[in-house]
Image (tube, rainbow, N blue to C red):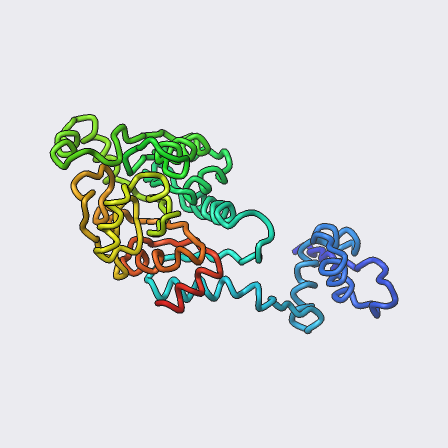
Length: 328
């Protein structure tokens, strides 16, 4: 039998004296302090990258390197896990508070929501899109990245209002960024009577659009409060007299144009039967429901929506997350 040649283990190049001829310590210094890549460390030591991996592992085992995570960095993770457990969410994502520094909260929530949405989308998904300032921020934060077979569907009717209340804008921007099929809902958000609404919904074109809405695999929405500055009121979507009736009925939040109380139950009112869009029961049946909302003024509204089980995924900020947990 022929003799097998065995290659000797590589010998590291000259190690600086201050490292006591210890290749493990030298490798750890180059990697963790000088910031070289593993390939860079391998070149400096004259060994293979696999040897560098072994050296770094040995450095951790010997205590040469101790990796610690700043507790402040874990605060958001801790809040997120507690929120998910409290409200039965599949996932919660909590962004840190910046104490007035940096971009506005809506933009930061939009960026975080865009990351979550992009990571969750799969080929041939049907994504329902609602309306609101935060939903529009998500749309505008999305990068241009095609998702094959994706359909983006508007789930609430349209209205002549502000940019914040523009379901068709939110839907079209998202579809454009993701190179997706865009299906806008060609109907008003509120009709003059229940009879007119019933007639409209019997139109074949509208029927097909609602079939698509009910086939949504994911939906993106925000939560509205019932303050005068809230989107539903400030945009003119809810007339003052109708809004007052809902408030007197115990409404604390608006979910895709529909009012709910603190327990997450539908609050009946003058717009019932006149709205064109996904219903609360249909919303709950969507497999993945991504809610992006934040700000202390929305804590009560968000508490109601989460209690009502309208979301499976939540993106919010640390300050609001703390209020939600305290009030849960």
